[in-house]
Length: 216
Ligand SMILES: N[C@@H](CCC(=O)N[C@@H](CS)C(=O)NCC(=O)O)C(=O)O
Image (cartoon, rainbow, N blue to C red; front, side):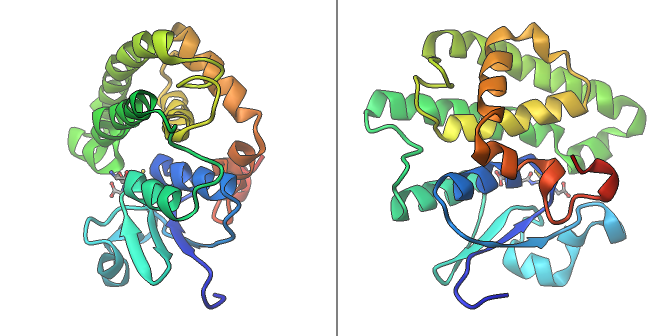
């Protein structure tokens, strides 16, 4: 690992890691990936070494500027404050609040309820149904909100932190076989975003730790 380069502790399929990977890509920040396999060896997030970085035992964590930060939205906000271009939070306070509202809707209202550790608790058989239920509940709300906030992207016509939350959550939805076409605005924005380079190079199918059978 090159001295001074930011290090992202990431798992290819982790939606929270993907949010940060997109922010790093958009802002043109060169970084190294240290993969943390959430399933292998009972989960490498539980290793003592990783717990020393993030006691919550979750990815992502980013080592940058001599600091270790966990929680994807806190990481993105730090990047925004220290490397402001291109902007991921609009200048206008009302639009900024809307971006944060949508980001939190996904990051606290949907993803934590369908996270790996929760699905393990719910159990193998009902895990899928549970994930579908919480994603559908969240997407119903999100679809309504986006109908009034969206332009080309979630909030107007500029890519924002909300979009960094949307695309990885749609990928989770697809993984859990949620019928995403039921949400036309979500689907449309997702498709538009997936055409952008920063979303493509950071995609779970193109990470250093992506298994060969899932590469595309
Ligand atoms: N609020 C945290 C959530 C982090 C999180 O849930 N990470 C998941 C992967 S997306 C994880 O590490 N799960 C490991 C586990 O459940 O054991 C964030 O936004 O970074």
